[in-house]
Image (cartoon, rainbow, N blue to C red; front, side, top):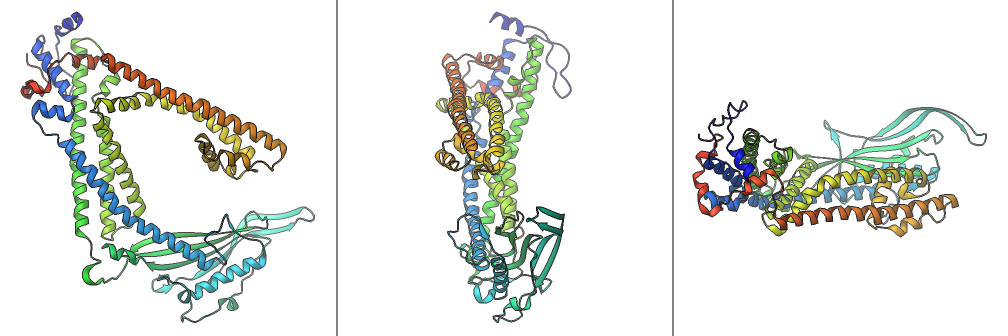
Length: 547
């Protein structure tokens, strides 16, 4: 490389920008060039090669392996606890549906609906009487909610249009769309008798103006199953809302149960034989996870900073001695994206572990936040394993393919998304009134995505059989064109895009041709890690060359 030899013999004067040390004004001898090239090569070595080169133990590698084990174990422990909490909430919701919805069945399909006035009154009074006799009916440890030592009442509220006169016979109506709310409250009985509150309640519904009837009440209970797993039980407050929805005024009232759960520490507890004490081993294990993640965060941040400093040195080196600009992609080679990935995972793990300790000690009850943080962190940790598989040539080609194909895949998905959204809007507005899977825009997107993956294609076609001929014909054209376009063309092009990138990467690996100026410069270094030259690069690891 005659041009390279000439470039290396060029002289440079002056100083580096602020924050960088000064390059020597003398011509770079071959030793200084080789030292810098060897330094770059050492930076891009994998941990095992660095260990053979300088004998430095791969602490980051060992720490990441340790993190995979302990973070996964931590997630499993929390998952078992979270599973008990979620199961307890679901079981209680099912219990409330059976207790308060008259005639409710587990195998109930579709919406729970009412069709007559008598049914509405019957269900409302059934809920009120069940609430009054809850202690005699329920199998669980359910109790009425209290605020400041006083029981919270059951409230029955009907939402009504402010004024309305509706006469379908004459096709006339006069309506004020503002909503009025009329409520009555009933407190729990003071004694556990079979009191029938229906006789003492004066409640009537104005069906002409009725928008909905909402029944609200609060029940409390304790999740005792955690005692057997060495966890203190949590106290639960269930704020239950039963809605009789008459917004459509179609003669069908939809009934639904909404359950807002609040988890808090019990005020007073005593568990014999110390089985309910906080498991300090679990707390120590969580502290170990935090310590490992903090250490990993520091080491990876240090490596990122070193990489950024080295890329500035490489940029100035080539500008000064080769009179060439270093491209942005070559500069980004010094920024290890995997380290950023690991830092994000460590931050999420540390935050999630702190919340988990708070949950374990009953200072916090943010199960959902903790689940999201720990779940995402564990996912990122396992994805990060791909980085170490990249040290093997057979696996590395797959990683390089993903990285190289990613920009083109994003561009392709943006173009395909335009067509996809067009079909979504069209299907929603045309087929929505006639097909349950196209009733809302969210359902349309899910239905079409399922069709792309070949899920329930026949069922989607079948549900349009008994519609008007024009809509039926349009649905056939719509569904046939969508499935043909996306299954046979879009997906095939998507696969071809990735396959082409794979073949390109495979071809480059066979030719072993440097693909960038940086790789070409480093490739001239023939020193292997075992040769020992890297042991003498400690002084040259500073940013200045000797004259």
